[in-house]
Image (cartoon, rainbow, N blue to C red; front, side, top):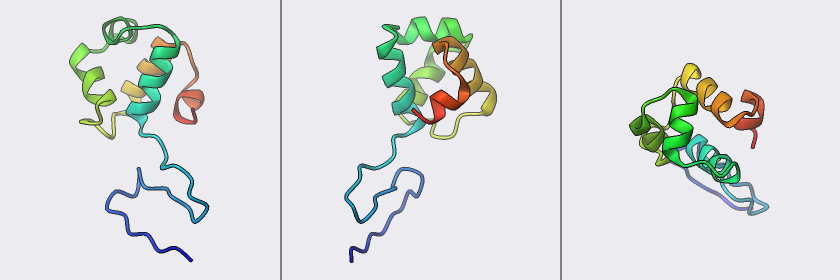
Length: 87
């Protein structure tokens, strides 16, 4: 049996089966943005958010953005909130 210690419970979701850690919300947004062939500036405009806010979220400087911010980003990506969170 494997024992793990985690400082950051949100990003440390490793099971004994050696699964990858769960992606952060920033990583999920960046991945979807690139799939949609959007720049950070383009998504920030579509989501009606400051460019710097999006950069900080994608870079994990902001790890817990507000629901309003995530809702705007999902709309800018043209995906449901559920699809964004569970991507």
